[in-house]
Length: 506
Length: 99
Image 1 (cartoon, rainbow over the protein chains, first blue to last red):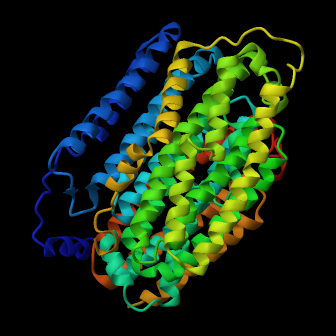
Image 2: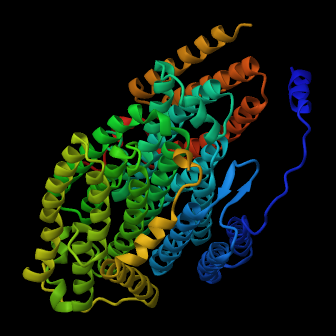
């Protein structure tokens, strides 16, 4: 057995791969940050644990520098390990998004953790590790590296959800997320093992070439299993059942992290696999994406309408936003639409990340005073915290898709991609999307009505204290939401850059 | 070569595992069922690697084993956590949040 394995390896002339350390620099900086965080946490006393938070945020900022230098360098297409790990413009845009999202999560968690008096070192370690997994995911172009990156980002996320050890809700959030997440990745792995058997290679490009042949049922099954695995990650209906409970039970900064970064990572993996490995299997996945998108938008919206807890409402809202991100993928196989669909997904992810992180920053700031998650606790916010009320209005309007705020341009790009396909299925999903974006005004408007028109529930109008870190986070996200909405050229520039190398033969 | 028989074994294990995840209401049994699925994946990978004569499947299987071990480590820790807090690991009891 071992000798046959060795002879297989010895067949080819094995040369050790040359490693482009510049291309790997963001990952290396993050990994170094993880080690430093662990060591500092180990050797500091309980009163000095706050030291770990700035180290985490500097790791993110430090990792962002090589992303910028890579983007500015002439060589924008770096292939490592025989094309298994690719640093191209798409992956750089996505890496930048993940790293900045991680930085904002650090900002909104800092004071929450300090006041919560909980295990800080572990928290920063887990956030950094999960972001490292996401950054790896953006470059992975091989079944093995996609699988490892997916687990790298998921396993810390399971632990973050269950982070409040003594809290029954947090336990429940962690267990549900864990069981469904692991089940999904097991199904995805079974699909991957079939793909490996079909293509005799784990490289996505090789799999793409093999699938250009006749589509047999076993091939379709493999494609389907892999898509189901990622559908869990992006909480697409009917694989969304974990999301509301996990989002509500997990600590609020973790919810912000899961609903933005973890979800975006799922979409990145899905897009990479669809575009690089399955371009010729679009007959199989287009209908699946269509159904997932229509169900996700509709079910997410309808359930969001009847929520009374703000975090749970945002959980369903984020499910429904995921449906809009899936929408362009329902027609992405129609030849020329592929590129504009990819652009729509990337643009939507960036705008959604900025807006949703802002909403959660406000939820954390307000909950610190009201100690409540009920939507009714936002009554009278305008009278005692006009700044927060105005920002919340901006973010809610952006999520609902009102111009000139960020969210509308995401929706615009998605609808543009879907309509440019000029197929009946494209028009049908656009109609469903349009109806849903009107329905969404219901629950976003409900929060705004509480803020602007209702009195404070218990007459408590003491002002909300906003800590500096939260203020910075609010500044970044509000600026991104406003600027990207009024000057959509910037974000669509990033979207245009984000062409996946080797996708659709390109 | 017995490749087809191995693939059949993998498919049967996969089905048993999926059935177990859906039908069992005990957290540890669900974890065991997920392990069954992962093992069916390993059997598949090794059978395909033997048939195709490439080492990729072997390496993939090693990664799957390593990651599965990490996953189960986290999973058992979480089950222990739940057991300590509520003296039960029945999944139906995990119903703090609804809607």
